[in-house]
Each structure stands twice: as structure tokens, then as C-alpha cells.
Image (cartoon, rainbow, N blue to C red; front, top):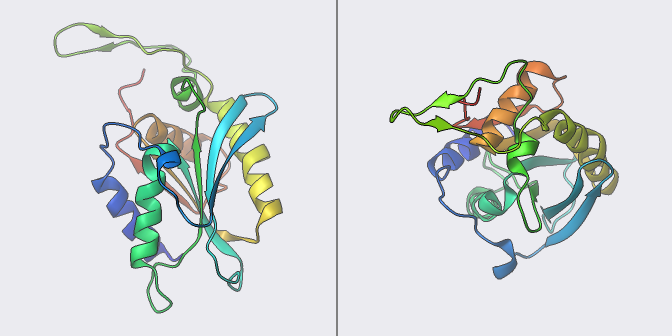
Length: 199
């Protein structure tokens, strides 16, 4: 997936980035997609939906995109790829890995880092915005890079030069955090409306 095609996906995901509720991927049948429970050694269970194109692996391997809050963005990403990809186009098909939760979400904890000094957000009405649990971003990064990503690279022939990660809101803050503080392991970090107010 070229930079232009990823930019195209980014622009469309920005447009859809303010979805108010999660779309259940269970209610829509997507060919070549499977949902599974992925057990993390340290973080517990995740619901992971994986789409793989039904065609021969391209030379160099498949482009791949990891979606945080995957239930909300899987169908949008799939539809963009299916409707816009073609052999002569910038946008080519690739693998989609949508990460979400089984029942109760842990996104606050997983996506928010642990600041040295926590600073409360004061809202315009002078009320204090208290976050739920936070501080698990480093552990989630370890799960993402040392467990899930490695498993995808075992299962599929991945183009290591065409790997992207998408996150919106808390997920956008997570992507910004890992981009600034961790080794660069993705070629593209899509940061949509990050929760910069946090601490």
C-alpha cells in the first residue's frame, strides 16, 4: 500500500472518525473475515477480526493495517478497500486486523499512558473530568508488538514496509504516544482526533 493509498484511507477515516457507536461486525457477513478470541499472556482476552483478501499474495507480501476500536472501524475500512482498490490504483487490497473487546471495554486502561504527574481536565463549566482507569498503554504496546503483530507475521506473508496502525480519540492518543516514545515499528501512524486533553 503506497503512501498515497494510505493517505486516502486516512482521509476517509477522518471523515468517519466521529462515529457515535460501535458497529457490530457480528451482524454483517464479510467474506474472508474471521473473528476470534486472542488471548494475551499479560492483558487478557481481545476480540480480533481479521480480513484477508481472496487472491494470491502479492510480491513482497500483504500490506496490513491494525485498527484500534476495531468494531467501530472494521466495516468502514473494508468498504473503502473493496470499493476503491484495483490493480492500476494507488489503493491495493491488504489485511485488516481490527482489535476490540469481548464484553466490557478496557480501552481507557489500554490506550492511556501513565503520566508522571496526573493533571485533571477542567471542563468549560468548571467541572473536573475524571478518567476511568488509565496507565496500561505500555502493556498494550507490548501485547500489540510482541504477541499480536508477531502472530500475524507467522500466519501471513506481511510486507514489513507497508504496515499501518489507526486510532481515534483515546486510540489516537495511544498512537501518538507510541510514535513519540517507542521504537518505530509501523510505517504509517494514523492519528485521528487524539485525546490531547488527557493529563
